[in-house]
Length: 161
Image (cartoon, rainbow, N blue to C red; front, side):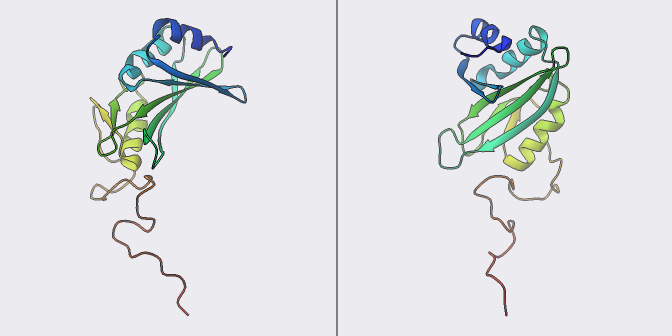
């Protein structure tokens, strides 16, 4: 059982929203339902003190269900504690989850990067558009099924002598 203070508070407030709790090398990861992500993040910020969102990223588990996982890295500036929240995103063709940019303003840029590179859409995002790739870029280059050389390149044939 986790000794992390946020775990018991989250389990009490969202008994059906917490799917899994994992501890590894003194790091706590809580997997939650994607439908509860905004409420859980709001609770963690207002009631538990996680006032800094350090990162949002996506993970592609090609070949597994769910294929995608959205990962939120949180930090409590007062207690200097870190917490990782994960939310599985199941729809492979158009994966989406609600935005947390209303909870932490910095989520705006993190979510744009996640959408740009992984193709995970953030519902109700105020400005979901490309941030790293050119506007006319096809696809999302961090997906595992993306062509390694790019969408308009021929596969690598090896060195020509």
